[in-house]
Length: 230
Image (cartoon, rainbow, N blue to C red):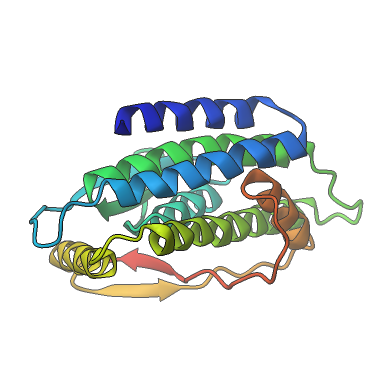
């Protein structure tokens, strides 16, 4: 059942990547994110079952390596993983992601698709002709990422609320604590970094991110700061 669910998600994400129609993209991503959130709940073990979190390092190449790394980080955090930016290496910006196997798999599927959608969306934008094209594009990328994070978090929270399984909240809390302990073992000192932007493309990026996911309007929730390992 779980493999069939993931295959349905992969097909929906592929359709979202191929279409240039924003309404179609929103529809495909809405269905994919809802299925992915439900998969995350269905994959939870019974209360009291012990599992060990894993980890993986993702390298994001340029251009826009830092902005790509932020997208990967916030997607991972939205699906209950713990990401840390660990700086340059291997030809790009690196993100070290900690989490349980099902959540790491979800983060990988979603981030891979959303990176493609973000790149295709950025290629279509037309910055204002005021000489600040790079600042506009960077702020667009930040807006896209923040909105994607907000909408994915909504899908996750809805799936958890609708689970109806006693002990779900306790299991989720226990797993968060396990992941936090795994992070602390690797990175005893963590600093927080809040990205700044001076461009005018943020709201356009938010609108594009909204279409990339659930297609709903609403008040934007501030994303968490980036966590930087040292």
